[in-house]
Image (cartoon, rainbow, N blue to C red; front, side, top):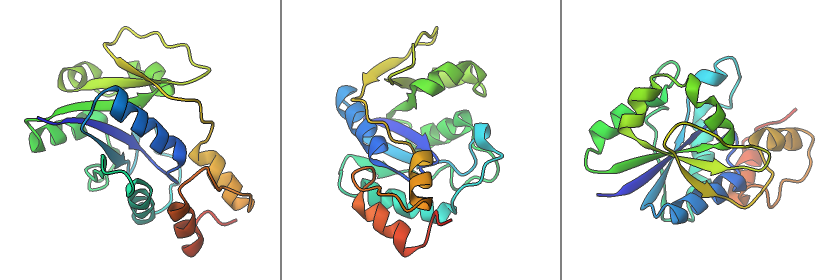
Length: 189
């Protein structure tokens, strides 16, 4: 039985904060793997524009390529319409019945948990790992495990803005991802 952490997100673009968080959770929770799972259409961001799925997947492949404990899971990319965690977890449990799945969420999403689709059923299928983040006081009635991650203030939104303004992004994202962005003229103004 493998212990697998599922790390969902838009990863638009993936950055070193994502990698740092995943690596810390991998070791603190003693997981075998972290599966990065890009969302096609997250329910809480249905009205936002995202970079083409093909580019986000390629950037994520590049970002995780140097860590053998990181894998890519495309279950949500293959789905049409909004991706609800409950539906995805049911699918992954069917595909991997002998593995124990953990779902990694940031402090901001812990506060949002009461609004999650079929949360009570989801809690019977998976264990959540909450990542503590500065500025968030975490209180929850839900049975979460927690991981502490060193503070690294970077976000995909900030990177898109910096890229659009032609500001430096070195040390904020993997070099391979930055090169891919430049080669494909992504996030241009």
